[in-house]
Structure formats: C-alpha cells, structure tokens
Image (tube, rainbow, N blue to C red):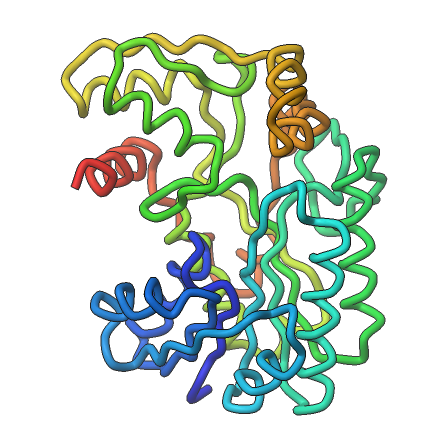
Amino acid sequence: MKTAAIFGATGGMGNALVESLVKRGISVIAFARSEHVLLEKQKRWGSLAIPMAGDAMKPEDVRKAVAKADLVFHAINIPYQHWDPNLMLILSNLLEACRMENKPFIYVDNIYSYGMQTHKVTESAPKNPHTKKGKLRLKLLEQIEQSGVRYLIAHFPDFYGPNAENTLLHFTFQQMLKKKTVFYVGNTSIQREFIYIKDGAEALVELSLREEAFGQAWNIPGAGTISGKEIAKIAGEYLKKEIRVKPIYKWMIQLVGLFDPFMREYAEMMYLNEKPVVLDGSKYQRLISPVPRTPYEIGIRETLKQMKS
C-alpha cells in the first residue's frame, strides 16, 4: 500500500489512523470537512499526511479522494441525532466510489449491531439489535456485505484516549481535571470494556495490510474490563487527589433528553452500561498476534496528560 484515504481524519479514530499509517511511512489523504483543522493537525502528522477538505455527503468530493488512494478507511462519526439518513448516504457515497475505482474499503464500526449479549461476543454471534441505532448499524453492515466491494469490518468497544473527544469517558475526564466529584454514565461498579484509541488504530492498520483479512468482520477488544470506580482511582493517583464518581442513570439521561437532542438519542443505549457487551478477540489473535492492549493505568494517564496540555 502506497497511499491510504482516511475519511473522518480529524475525529478520534481518524486522527489515530493517520498517526499509525504515517508512522509506518505510508502516505495518507486526510479527508475532513474543515480545512483549518486539517492544516493544524498536519503540523503534528507531518508531510506524509495530505489534507483534503471535502464533504462526504457529496459524491464528487468522495470520489476525488478515493481515486488517489490504494485503501479507503471510513472513520466518520456524526452525532446520534443526525445518523438517519446521513450515515446511509455517506456509506453509499463511499461504497460507490470504491466500486467505481476498484478500491478496498475498511469500516470502523461499534458494537451496537450485536444487541444484548450474555457472553463474550465472537464475530459469529447472532446479531439481534433491539435499539433503533443498533438496527441502523446492522443495515449498514448488510449494505457493505452486499455492495460487491472488497471490504473489511472492524467492531470496537467504546474508545478513549488522546483526541477521542466525542466519547463517554472524555466527558468524565473533563470533570476530573476540574473537580473531585464527577459524573460517570452508568453504574460505577459494573465492569465495562473500553479501548485505548491508539491500540484500536494499530490493530486495524495491521488487518488492513493483510489480504486474507478482507471479506469478513473482526472484533478488536480493549485491555479487559474496568469499572467507573477503578477509573477514578487511577485518575486520582495521577492527578494527586481523591476522586468520587457519581452515576448517571437512564432516567437522568431521559430527563436531559427533553431539552438535548443528543441525550434524547443516547437514552436507548444505556443498556450497554447495565449489561455490557464484551468482545472476544481470539480470531484476530489467530491471524496476527494478541491485539495491542495498553493497560488502563497507562492509557488513562496518557489521556489526562494530553487533555491537561
């Protein structure tokens, strides 16, 4: 691979993918809407990252970037309240461009399409989503599988880490930098899985460089599970203060949702904070090696360090 196109390059995962690819000496077409943000980030990315401002809702912008790439990564993330129909339109534009230009397509996905699960989830687990957003994500997966484009799908748990701003933990970390008592979405004692965003990017790039990884889906898990209280303990040790976490319950999310469209949409996903979905990464390990797993103690410290700076 000589050149990769990253759609959503200024987002959390997009940024991490650019960093991972550039580190390997691979040129990157960094595609996002804001030219100003792209140019600012390029100062850190270096000359191998080529900024391209454009709108993924416009087929002509998408095809221009796809035509110049050997591999296409879809890491665009938009607020919940804009998912329908925009996610379908963006995906259609990307798949059509990849089909016309005969380019392989790599899709960054979450765990919503799995729905509720009682055991560690393998890629072969039946998908039976019960939420509106889970059903939409399943439709997107089906669209990819039926597109005729050579594809690779990667399922990730919730991200955290440097520049991973539109995430649950970022919301909590922001408070930790300022206060001793902070809010955490969900039960503070329940074990949940998160993935350090740089680990996720490294794992996905490794997959993308292997022909045999295409035509299927892959789970990329985090470094085990952790509770809100354990997160607070690690953060407190780094920030040198005792931090207490208070849970945000579903009824609180629903109440805020009366005025906030994002929170209104998030309410149905609260099941993940009550009965978490945990990914099985043994398939990845069989093909490549163990998934990169930065311990939470290091990942949380690095995230807070970056946020402080």
